[in-house]
Image 1 (tube, rainbow, N blue to C red):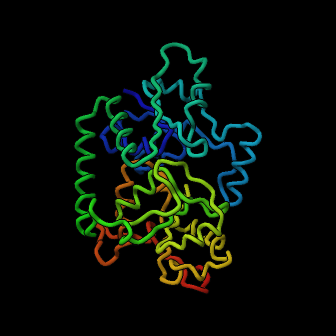
Image 2 (tube, rainbow, N blue to C red):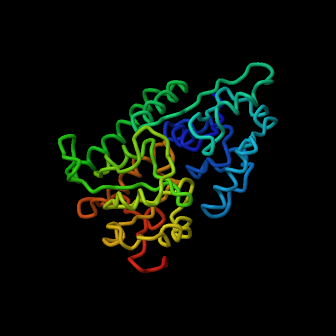
Image 3 (cartoon, rainbow, N blue to C red):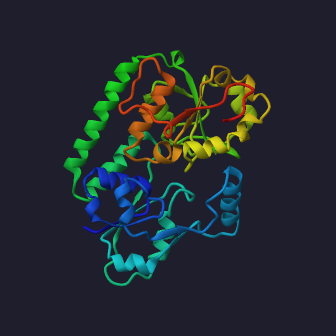
Length: 318
């Protein structure tokens, strides 16, 4: 089978299921594992994807206002790769090439058109369901189930370490707000509330299975969570540090419980939290180390590129 993946999470599942050799094309955002860097790229962004939170949001919104696509697909290269399977998504028009866009561009495909699989998980359970559906399409279901079983075993061990199970009273757990964009301010939905629960926390504001939505600063301030987890979509920890002023300059920032207790965590949204891929299990582990540092000692240890702590009250980011 010859596979083209236009979705970073799908590329990661394909690789962890042992099918990377079948990958003949990828999107420009498919950057993990590192060995996929040699696979030909068939997409590019049509908007200015560099810059801070405001600049990127302005560029995206302007493109959408004009009714233009956020991504271009190199159809000539795509055809030359002769894929049997193309994997994309039908969930977020900003995150990757969407199914309607791809179907429109493949409309005049001559000869035997490739099969298109669109992944669109909304919850953590659906992330696994979609991964298994992809595995079934690649005819590697047995090996995929073994991979996921191993990941689930690690998760059970983690939850035993933090002493959380289905009988735990949610009100006894730290409240957590997951910020997925800094300006405009957005709180994560989709699978992130499930990730918080698996990590031993109580999610606030974001709803499981629902899209990420803008929120007013006053709404977040009034919720006053015990922990604030910053994971802007597509951002590294360093990029989040760069844009942290969008939060620290807001009225009442220093009065927040999470700021006072120095429990504002800067996390790698791009690598872990924003992608519905196998590294969500590492995301849960990293977040658990934020919520329950006395009980969790991840292996390998959490690196500075995975997690850093926000500034103390009245301090500027270092």
